[in-house]
Amino acid sequence: MQTNSLESARSLRNLYLVRAVFQLLWAGAVISAALTQPSFASVLLIVYPLWDVACTLYDLSASRPTGSACTSQVINALLGTATAVGIAVTVFSKEATSIAIFGAWALGAGLLQLIAGLIRRKQLGGQWAMILSGAQSTAAGVAFLLGGLSGKLHAKDLGGYAIFGAIYFLIGGVLLSRKLSQVSEVQAQG
Image 1: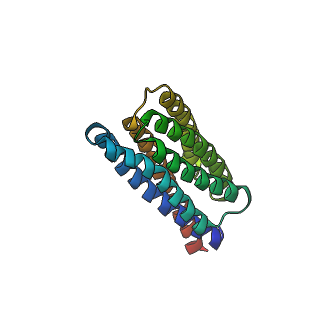
Image 2: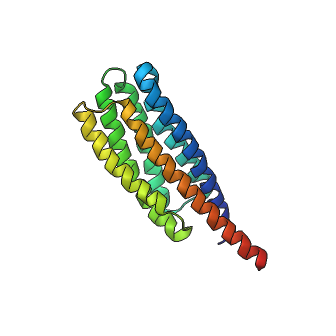
Image 3: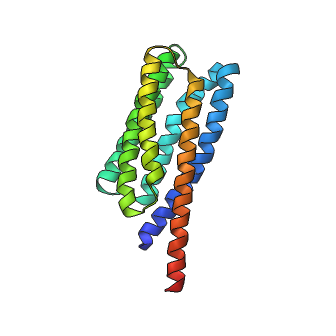
């Protein structure tokens, strides 16, 4: 693994681990707030896609992807920003619509994550968790979109989505840590 790839893998591993912790905290907060403080849960719905945008921008600056990997991340950041605006406009008056918007974002972001995982699998390895996460996000996005449009889903229902995402990010971080350890051992021997 080249020095650039090593730095990229380290940054990505750290990002995955931080994302796992944040998503678990967010899930706990949104599940408990949805029952007792719906206004706070509404704010949390706005925060989630903005957090994803911040992570994407960090990833872009740390890994400096090129070609289709860069394009998919830029699209993801724009999609997340538009989602946060859409949720902010609707969440306090039409919660079901905001859930549908969240679902459309999860679907799109899942497809983009799937693409990024497939590209990074060739470059860095250890991306099967991100590939599965992208596929799961896409499926969950369809469910949230349809559930929001029919008025059957609420903010608390999104907590499980974040928990699954956290698990995938944790696995991705551990896999990249293993890969980095293996590379370090080879370099130490060489």
